[in-house]
Length: 85
Image 1: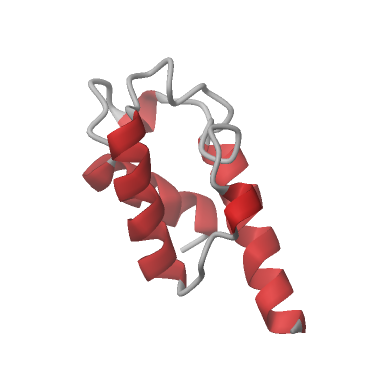
Image 2: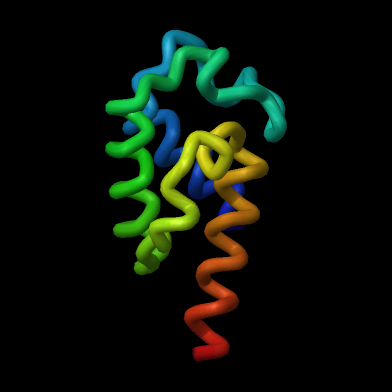
């Protein structure tokens, strides 16, 4: 399963969006689709658990969780940095 597919799965179960996650484009604005601040925290925790990562403080912002593509990029960059360390 790709990171994007896993993120969509997590978003579907933790994002509490009023729309079907499958109907959203990878670059669709998740906040415009109904993602709340509280749900974004739940989403972040679930992603950290699933990918065994920790979002650094500079990634804890609206931009990181703005879309499936943005989350996927952040996850890929964090996991690459952890492997390089």
